[in-house]
Length: 194
Image (cartoon, rainbow, N blue to C red; front, top):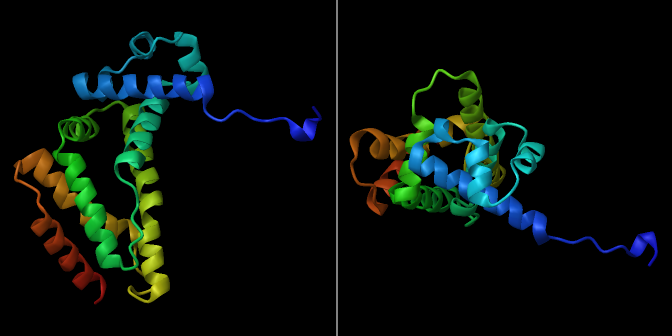
């Protein structure tokens, strides 16, 4: 077979190992908190060699961020409904469902836990920057459609949308329902259109 015809495997063992390690990381975070995740224990739980984890992720912080980003991308896809209002309602509804789940609550609490460790703070910042980078497409599309002014700050708009949901889960323990998310979206869009 010539070099041009070499078939690359997609998935396979590497994908299975990666998924096993990420799953073990998420379980450890949900059970014990982000700062209790250890590469040796994750490797043991995933059934892989510790050196494999270090080779692929390098540090515990990189492993945690990869696990969180991968999980949140699966659980919180970025909608494309054709209007910003419906995108925001769909996105906020998905986030509410995620935050209302036992696993979502545990991960949110883990990410919000106060910690002076600079590497953990850097990891949280990297996680949120990654989520905002993915979600800003909703704002960019709305600007292109003329639904929002060109000077709209995507990160601020997304912070205003998601902060009340996290507040209810982490601090006030109030319920989140479709009525609330619709009201939040309308309030946000009213403010953005001024």
